[in-house]
Length: 389
Ligand SMILES: [Zn+2]
Image (cartoon, rainbow, N blue to C red; front, side, top):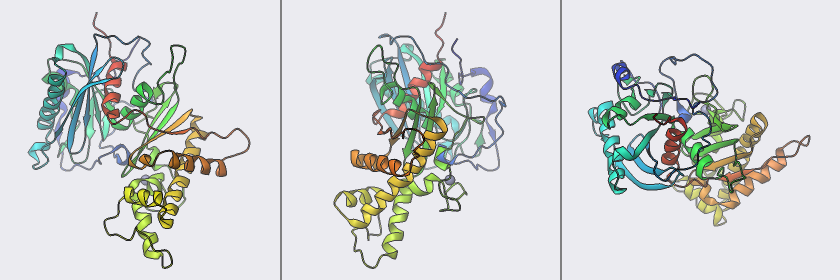
């Protein structure tokens, strides 16, 4: 029997929006601070139900919604994970009022309806809505506990209920945005079965290498969420008493291998270096510029990129050892460096890994594409949906 985590309880949840004196939560899974104690104290290891064994139906469609700090995205997704139409809309970030729950919901619904119009569909065709969101979430109740830069002064925003209620009761389901990315990778990316006899990949770690590092973990086909609904794989410590991290700790993977860290380390090396002239000596340095310079042969940039590969290799080895995962999928801007960077990570894994068991170097670039967050949100709705009747 499929579970209905996150399904909107339209009548009860709206009353839970409450004003608080301050909003202390942060924006991404990599920086989440839980604002309140979760309402469910039951230990759980899965949030998205069993893997659906039903075959794709040509008459069933899903709405994937991706809530970002400054914009909304939505897509109509077919039952086999194809994006049929998509739309993107800026949130009104110019005023506090524009970021209040009711106005953000209006914008999300308008964005979804623009995607529906592009697909020449109405809500009656949509079996369920998946909403990918940053911040602290109560997945089972479909509630955003708190998120930086959105819903100022509010916590416990019943996002699923508000959206479902706005579109005639289509059921809505919530998922962490990093978990949405790993679900997409399972459904249409690296984990996708290649034949009817292929079960696909059911054990995967997905790392998003951006300004921070987000992590999604799937074990035996189920998203692992831990007791509080959040796993912070980007903040596992790889260097004791190492670099200061945005989370307040030191030595986290994010402090060494995120795009921001690449830039920070490059600037430090440029400042230290007296003997190696580098194209990195620019004030507005970006992670992409470091990788481009490395590809063009700049010696200092190559060292920075190689160090990044080494730090990621340490992180990957830890994930492989703790979870015995089949594959680690990497996404984010720096993966556009392609095969060379992945091979560099694998090379470092081989240098550092153990000899007691075969080394696992199954590190790959994401294949789910630019709409991964939307496809994954739709997948969450599909997994949790219980057909009527
Ligand atoms: Zn950290």
